[in-house]
Length: 173
Image 1: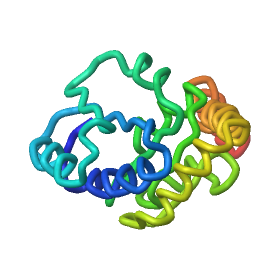
Image 2: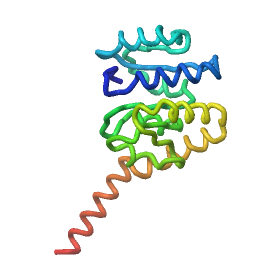
Image 3: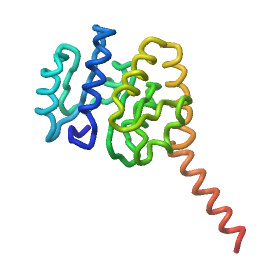
Image 4: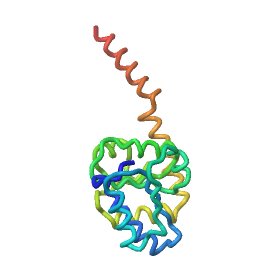
């Protein structure tokens, strides 16, 4: 990902600081490079969570990263339809995302993920803690996310919708 202001990663770091007070072994992984990278690393040290936050830099092995996480958090302040959300869902990871841009088209709150308000540290932290403490719920949400993602966003599904549209248009002639 791109480490820029609009990604809201300072919010994620505040959440991480709250989570590690209760679950000291929790780890947060941030992949990507960008203009905010040094500021985020500095903020991590300021919060005293540098042992709990791993900055991976640019990576091309997204599948390995998703396999290593329990929860995916997208704290963006602004976003279209985030491919990272779809990728996390494809890997059956529960998603917590801000309710901006197209996130509401992907996530149905409390069904295949959680929608939160941008910058809402308390709510995001609560959702992270809930999913970490309730693995069965996290797995169920992850499975549901994958199912919905493939139903709504798979190539085969999009192709079928286009075919249906053509059939409908030819009937109108």
